[in-house]
Length: 306
Image (cartoon, rainbow, N blue to C red; front, side, top):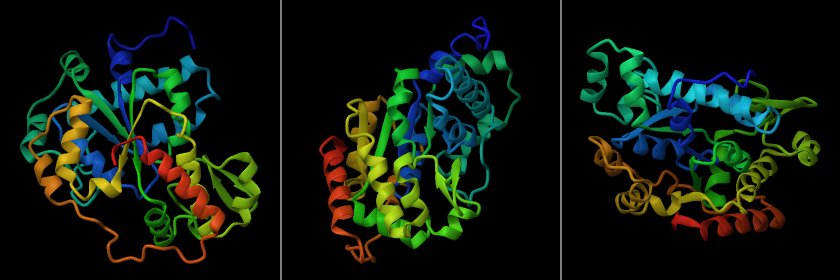
């Protein structure tokens, strides 16, 4: 890329101070994403495919090229478009629906008039762009190198509940992995695709492993990869659902955010999704149990809510 290529003034600075919400799937990332989106300052990009494709290329692309693509997506395509009402999901049945987080009056105000780039850009620079993108834990260290001003929240959940949830959903069954799934990009290893976060030395085991073994590995991969990171905000889902109002107030105070029109309604509807399920996992080996619990406890020690 030509070194003289730049985005609009302020675009890179705004994108660079983004809020990245990640963690393993089934840890309450969607719930937390909509809560954050409900605050006055946040605009949320909900699992954008462009960034799902881009994050695994951290380290593979030159840092300045990677950052240019990231900033262009987050500011020019997403943030400016969202403020104009052009990048919003109006399907009320989706978790990513704008109506899940914003009051209808806030949406209507964006759609009531046409918008010019010259007017939108200054407004965009006053907002807090956020990205909800699970499974990116293992890239957080590299992301800090190319975007040092960002804020990262990592959702955490106890391994028994999370692994059982993965098994019930069938996330890592051969059929699900080989079809249309959330585990792209991937590498083809024999007949079973290996998601981008599978390490080279586990590829053979992934190809022959059971859904339980893959789920256990996934848990450990997500949380062992962030044990040495000191600049993360860990949030314990298990503790959050016990007293969501107090815990969310603490979180947004740390982030400098303020509750919006729908924040309280979202908090009032939070409940524990797994109270009807057993607390132990049949067939989980002692080695995987000990490893996953050690990762969980180490992250829990750092949790903002825990």
